[in-house]
Length: 360
Ligand code: DAH
Image (cartoon, rainbow, N blue to C red; front, side, top):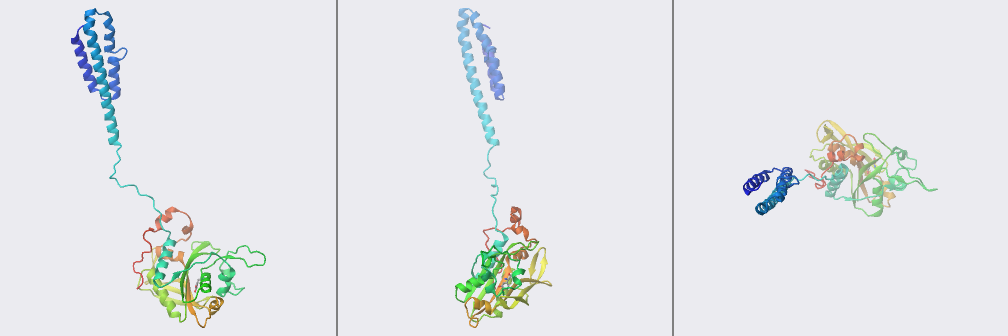
């Protein structure tokens, strides 16, 4: 090739090819076929040596110009293709900030905590403070001061966990009920007393409705003229608030506890709705708590004069209340760390105790 016409045609063709290259691979193929070792332009450069000086004077600059322009064109096209690839990636991988964010896993309140809170709210409305005592109790607070005689079979019927005792001492016990908090409260303060004592208690039991650790709430009112009418009114109001109904029908069945006289078990009328209960209607009766007038011996054991002070006490199972109100039929999962159970039965920690009716 010795004139520039052909060269212009070649440049036109290569320019078109470069501009039409669809991707980096196609572009590189064109570069190799034009400027590579055996490329069309390179081969023509090699022919320069065989030309006359006059021809070379024309063709040399023409070929070099072509080579430079083509190289620049290929570089520009490569940049364009790379930018386009980046744009495409950005477009397809873009984060849509308007999409709803995935939910953060959130903890929930255990039904026992929820019910404890509900109880505290209800009784706080009636002027009760919350009192606490130790889980590891001594014989005096758990039994003796509560009027259990030394050989009383009730010490066994509670299926007590005894701790190992040092020589000559009575063993400590994992408290079998929250009643020892009554003793601690009466011994450390003066009446009038109005407390509830929520907490863990322990008995050697394990089946669908019994676990070796469970929860109770104890109640104690001590004042100068407290009588059984106060006990009934207080507990009926409590049941109404807790089960969110104003139609509580209750009966107080005579019973025996060493620490109260008279003693009763409180039953309420109810019907089943699935696994939960509806209180106030139906034709079944369910025992809900134990109660009674505090035994004079208990008041005396705490250093108070039973002729001056009387009062009532009550105790109930918190876990059982939760099962009845929120419809669980098995107690055991309460204390097995299964987050699925908690997710299902747990409560929003933000809701606190939410009672629709409250106290009337
Ligand atoms: N301490 C009893 C129990 O664990 C419950 C109880 C019954 C407590 C009657 C009381 C009460 O204060 O008056 O079974």
